[in-house]
Each structure stands twice: as C-alpha cells, then as structure tokens.
Image 1 (cartoon, helix red, strand yellow):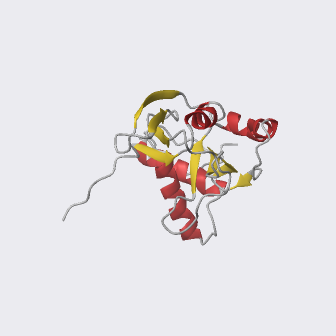
Image 2: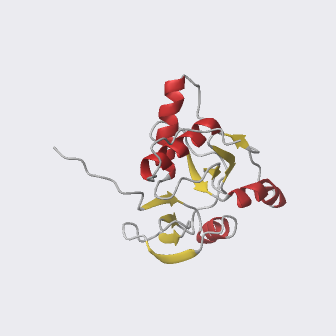
Image 3: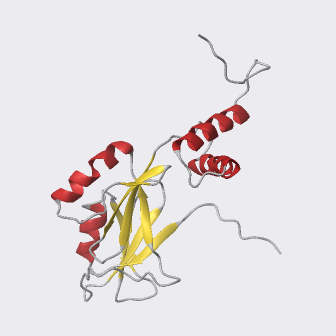
Length: 193
C-alpha cells in the first residue's frame, strides 16, 4: 500500500451566493484578483469564479444569482470547515483593524497565537475568515512549516505549553546550523565582548 502524496493545496472551493457579492468581498475587501470564470461544469445553474490569493493557488466560488447572502455563522458541525486563514504581511496586518473598522466589519481584534498574530471576521455569508501574519521569516531554504516543526520539538522537550518566540528563534538557529556550513569547528554561542 502506498500514500497519495500531497504537494500542496491546489484550490479551495466555497459555495457563494450571487456573483457580485463574491467579487466585492474576495477582490474588493481581500484584494484577490478575479482571474477566471466559467460555468460550474457539474451544475449548469451555477457559475464558477476563480480568485488569486497571491501564492499561486486558487480560491474558487460557486455562485448562483438566485441565492442571497445570509450573514448567519456557517456550520461548525463535525466535518464542516471552521475557518479559512489568509496570509498577510505584518505591514498589512498592522492596518487590518483600521481597514475592517472603516468598512463596518465586526472582528475579533488582534489575537496572539505565539508564532503568529490573527484577526477573525466573517464574510458576507457568515464564513469565518482569519487574517494571519507570521512573526518570523524562515531561514533561506527552509519553510514556515519546517520552523514550526523544529519549534514544536523544542517546546515539547522544554515542557512549555505553547510555541513562543523563544522557540521560533531557537528553531531558526538550529535550522541555519544544519543547512549552512562553517569553517569553524565550534559553532557554539560566544561572548565576544
């Protein structure tokens, strides 16, 4: 038996209401260019809208002009999607509260997640959206996931409750030492002054 090895998310498809509501939110609020549209090939009454979230993947929406937006929170039953987290830069994140407020969009305010900061709000259909900004940049040649994996190992070994910035900094140092060679025999921390 062999795995079906994943290599990333290809796209995520959500059920939308009317076409313009999706365009206004995904492009007009979140800045994702509307790049492609065709009929839903499995349901002729629907359209299939494609948006570029900025990382080479896609967010797609099935729309139907007979459906109207309903701001009631979407299901959180088992099997349902709880929320969609969207990566934003620290510069954009620092402006998020102001920009949501100027549109009258209720939100959670900034949430400290140890390794990132988050803000939560719902789209016009009641689907929970998270704006997430990492607190770190991975070393060249490493991914955010690799830093988090190493930070997790350090956190568990130290008996700490959750990942904090100390774990991230130490993980980045560990990954850098593993991936970048040095002429020094001893790469331990030194007191240079």
